[in-house]
Length: 89
Image: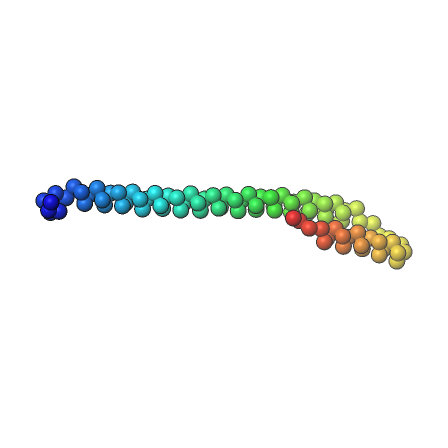
């Protein structure tokens, strides 16, 4: 069969190839979107933990009261150090 006399098979091959390229590109987009959604979810979790930590820090600083003795001041300093080193995981 001569290709020039019957272009239909080439048209089907070309369309099939285009469709396969489209499906592959679409799958890449879906995969990329799924990754971005996962990253967004991780971001939201980190952001929520940060907000809690900031709120706790604000409360701790609002409750600050000057201490009289060196021992009381050292004890207060240790409490602030413990809070500031709190992990946000």
